[in-house]
Length: 230
Image (cartoon, rainbow, N blue to C red):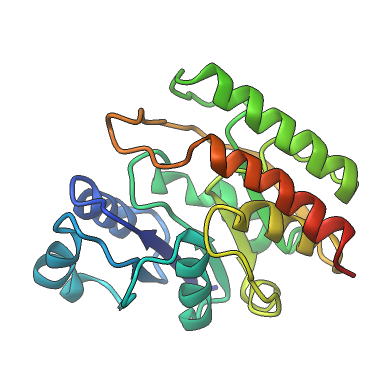
């Protein structure tokens, strides 16, 4: 099965080349790599053009900054693989673990797989207490409305059969993508699995972008896409 790795990217000059090299080394032979640059202004775009374009399948350059959800929307549209996985452009998630995410789909047990930072025995960096509390609250409220038992809806690592994700209209442009996609896949006939992954979180000084405002918006999106949409 061919894998499409979709990488949304915004101002990741310090890590973009490292993560591309890690994805290229990942132990999955048949894969395409699609980067969507969300109008970076820190030199990322120049690195992509000069040192990365020749290495990978496709780079989509957004004409203005729109957000992670918008970048993923473009990347999903362009993907041609049987399976699509999301990879952030930082170094918080390790591509060497793709096999954990993909095996339930390859074995025809799952259609969608979430990689959880909070289950299993994998290593994860200890960072922000209130982020963990907020993530737990967001996941709990989402589960109450979707009737799922996920432990980490805000995880980057999500893998989908291509026909599943391409059948869904993504409306959120920023980090509201996570609760939106969780709500929407809960309403269609698909098999959802969750696997434990490692997590190498970064601090705000190291470039972390999500903040408390995104958490408030995530709660709004949970109610919007679970209760206000059919």
